[in-house]
Length: 301
Image 1 (cartoon, helix red, strand yellow):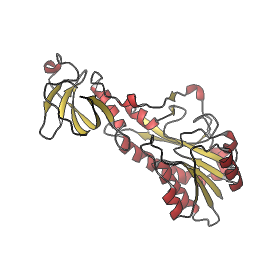
Image 2: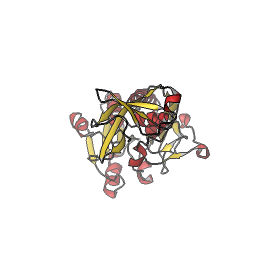
Image 3: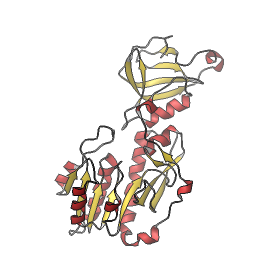
Image 4: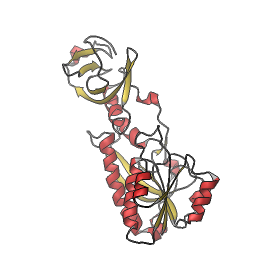
């Protein structure tokens, strides 16, 4: 079997490793990897070159998979199946049609819900209780193909981007096992998506990570958890300094004591640098922040 693999993030490397181990049992299997050079816009970017070199896998690095030369290389390789994990660029239909078994894509949501960009982050920002891990057959339209494997991922109260990412990894490993056991019966597995029931999440921008202390405390908690490692962190600006917030916690305070306090006021500062701030409705303690700010009780952020 000839396997085409496309990706450039941490999850890509983990799934590629899983596919390599599964395919290694058959010495006739060959893998071609398409990846990219360093992508500064992806916090979870992973260079697949070292893995490919260590395991004698051919890798092509490109900023545009749809270039004519790449299409020629893929056609010449004659893949039986393709996998695309963590590749933000839409793949042209000319490439999608090349693998004779199919071209499998991945999206961390319960398709057809929540198609589009940054699904793990948006799920946490919006406070969803459940998301998903979905493998599907690629189409020229984003995240629109028939589903071949889907699992629910439950989001607990203390989950953040890091813990949710780990849950996603564990789900995908079991799903890849299932897919490899059923490579020649995709027609039996396929579930067509009802796109009339879908929504499409937009690409997150820098301002989406901005903390406004006039927001509800719970929203700021969600935002912070969504953008913690491996992502860059929620942020705010104070005295022309830019600060990244990695952890906050709700502080229970007497409602009568804080009802007349404006959002953004610092109520107390601890010796270790942690401080309590009033949000629109409740108060938060800022526990992890970089760089360490010089905050004074009574000032406004």
